[in-house]
Each structure stands twice: as structure tokens, then as C-alpha cells.
Image (spheres, rainbow, N blue to C red):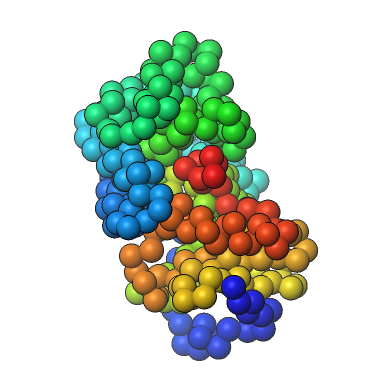
Length: 304
């Protein structure tokens, strides 16, 4: 593992670069279809192949169940105006209440997941979610939204998280990206969730800039490269990497002792903020040995 000092300006991002958009909203179907394909590629020859193949199938389900779903409840103008005035995310995950659109997505996902190949513990977890009463389902929903999934019930919550990702991606896609603004370090400007990871993108209007990827709604938002994603510090920011994998790094901060992965899509445009996060578990293990805590939230990685 090598350590690279990033406290100095990065010459590759200085010059005549267009001003990047602040945020890019998700395409609710394409984001999961692409992720499913990426998981399948990553599974080939990987030591976590059974799990990556399962996640490929689950993301495929996330994409396939959306046709004909009821429209989510629109965000009213007063809520949008209040959020902008007080610099709050317009989608308040804390105040989330399941509506008919979410219930339909959740049930479709559970029904479709039955056909996936999965180990017996995962199938038992799927059955527990399917048979859970309203109170238990509500508890699981709140656990995911509070980013507080209990370790002993990770398997059940994966299915709940997958349904919530679909619903919040559909909600986020209906917002006006130009109305979004920063609501704090490490906080999605759409729904207030933590990022899963970050990416150095190669978009036409934003080559070489960094975007955080929301763990819940899939929105990506622009963030300074040499600044800690978690606490905003610009001091003692270092990159950790596994030799031979320079397109994937962990940004560590000596102030908050946290880390966040960065995927360089300029070097490999196939990198996905969620799928490649799971597939690079080895980098997490190495950085943790240095005493840093993981800052990114990924419901598919909590059991590891």
C-alpha cells in the first residue's frame, strides 16, 4: 500500500476546465441495470463471486420492477421552498412514510427476489422479511434510513435497503437538479444520506472532478478533491492504495480518522461507486489496519 500526499494542489485539475454541475440526478432504471452488469463482470474469478452474483441479480430486480409502478407522491412547493431556504435536503428520509408507490415497489422486489440464486441463509432472511408484520417492516425501514442496520440482521435489511433505493431514486429523479445546494460535508443534497464512495468522473462538462455517490437515492454531487468528504478538513489528507490498483484509492483523514474510497473513472469508466466498493473489500481491510474507520455507507457491505 502506498501513501500519497494530497494536501497540495493537483496540477491535473488546474486550468481551463468547465464549471461542473453541482449535482447529477439518477436515472432510476439505468443506474440499477448498469450496476447489475458491473457486479456480474466483477464476480468473474473473484473470491466473493457468489455474493457478487447475488447482488448482480438483486440490482437487476431493482431495474426490472419499475415499469408500471405507481407514481411517488410529489414533493409540494412549500416543502421545496423551505428546504432551499434552510439548506436542507428536499427529500427528508427521517420523516419518510411508506406510500402506495413504495409498498408496490417493495412487494414487487420481494416477489421477484424469490427467483434469485442465493444461499439458504439469505433465502431464510427473504422469507422473514416477506412474512414480517407491519411493525417489524417499519422497524427495518427506519434502521436503513437511520444508517443503523443491526449486524445480526444484515441479510434481512439488504432487501429492505434495495427497495428503498428504488423508491428514493425515483423520488430524486423528479427533482430539479439546478435547485439543489450543499447541505453539509458528507451529506446528499437530495435526501441527506451519506455517500457510499466518491468518483473522479470523466463527464464532458466535468472531467477530473470528484463527485460523491449517495448510498440511498443515487444522486451524485460535486465535492472538492483535496478535502475530507467526512469532516471537511483540508489537512493531512492522504491516499491509500493497493499496489497495482492505482485507479482505486482510499482517502484517509488524520483529523477525523475516517476514510472514503475514490474510484478514478478517467482511468476506468466501468467503475461503479457501489459495485466496485463491494468488490474492493481488501482495501477496506488494509485501511482499517491503519486505524481508520469507514465513512462510506453501503448496505451491501455491512456484513463484511
